[in-house]
Image 1: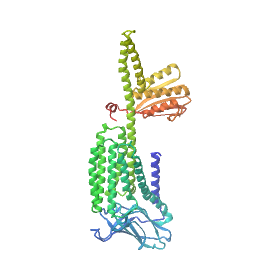
Image 2: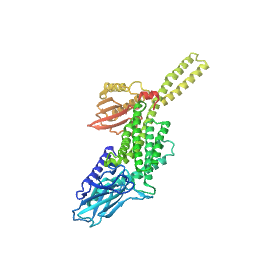
Image 3: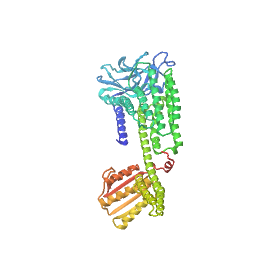
Image 4: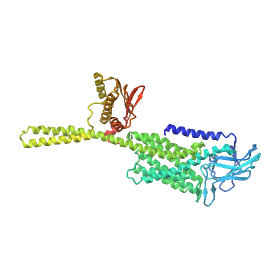
Length: 591
């Protein structure tokens, strides 16, 4: 599935959700000002009387320090003659609520007792049936709720009263977006940790594997917060456990981030556990909800600063990095920062954007998957660099054997010839040197390519083009840039790709005209060969002996090849990246 297709599908789903919320013309919209009436008691000092609160909106944006029981009340008129199959739809109420219409309880979610058994339903969509005949011309709706979560009051819309036929589609869509997705997220997280757990016994593991594995577990525990679960402990303790799991998840993710970019070390890892311990202990001993929310704000701010500091450190030391690390930083940092910053804004009550408000959790899961995927990519890139460096070193070693040791052995053989042909010692030396030369030649042929490149690839193209044009085989037009590839290995492989494709074209396509182009653009070079023959359409797969060799040679350089017809012209394209052949890294031995 392409990224563009995924974005399009998500956009259509969001548009459908918005259209469902705005397309309920037959329903009464109860959003707007509601009267906020706190329950009397020692938990609400300084709050007395009534306040007008806008709904839907997070109550904590207006009353950030309110924790406890209260009511939201609104009067409305109902002029419709139909009182059958009516429903009341509320996007979300935090955290535990009972709803009364004209003094009659018509529904509720969650449970809260002072001693054990809590069940918070802040994320659940409310959909209540209204008994026939209960509505009058003048009506009063009262929602009695307990505020014990980051999202309080009627924190999410819509708030609609109407027929079930008008509201059913909106309810099912809201339930999917706000209930089902988060429940599925938790199940997926535990499943992913199970996958990591099964693969842990294998010796071959990527750097930081244990960090990302237990980050999945920690966030899976934290994501239980999004599901309606009975909790047999004071709810504040449940929130503390969830947030400590979130702290561990963020810390492990950040440590994995460091390992991904090779900037982490054992000493740095140990030092980063100190603030994690401080925040965890502070969270554990927070005496009330206000202190707990404050710790959560400071923790998220700390992790945002740490990610930015890591990016700055990486930028200042970018000369020690490579292309794979830079790609990891560029792709992963926006996702990680978005998840942390969005959660921070939520806990600071700076915004009330519904989708950002609730879907930051999905971005937290996405950051795990992106980081791990990019790490696998980085290790694959490192493996490619080592493989290419090995080919380069094989070439250098074979040349050393041939040029230095081979020359000395030949000199020994020449001197032995002057000792006299009848000398048994001379004959023995000559026989021995011939055997050594033969064995050395076999070793050299094994370690290097079948033939070492004698000149640059662009000179090879010119020589072949001139030969074809002078022989009259076909007309040749060449546009060749004069640049040398960074590696003899690449020079050799490009020569073989060029020769094998030209041979196949002349043998099977029988063209009367060839156009050859060899260009370098930024960090890649391209070889393009066009002919007007019968055509050799090929997608680059390893198929056929000659074409398979071409595909394998291109893959050995992390390149790509393909052939296609365009306006009765057969076009062959070979593209090879050059960024992995940084001369400084090869010389210094850095990976």
